[in-house]
Length: 153
Image (cartoon, rainbow, N blue to C red; front, side, top):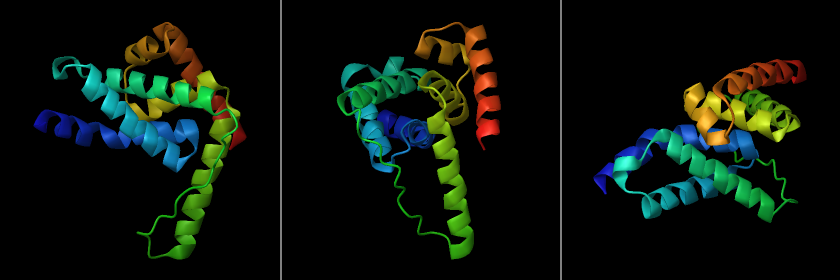
């Protein structure tokens, strides 16, 4: 159990960031995060655990969830209570919401690949294995998605 705890602590933040970018839904991201770690623990021995495997499980879980509930589109963010400067906190949340709205305007493959690259620091090869395309194609799609996102912002 110590191995799982260490693996969880090491990867939960980057996985959550990826899921937030993909879903723009705080509660859904946490649910999928927990489900992903549960599936990893239940179905795979610890010797095969890797960051790429975890992100692949999370991606597939997210896709399954989207198929189940096509109409759910909550973009409510929970309020961050740590900031003392409420005006600055407001602007940070507004910028974050703008980025999430812009990410939602990308097509699902662009959003998925860009989110994997930004959130996980996985290699292009790992991302290619996760999404099932070539490494060169991943690089092109990341580049194009960044340009498109920049123009949207």
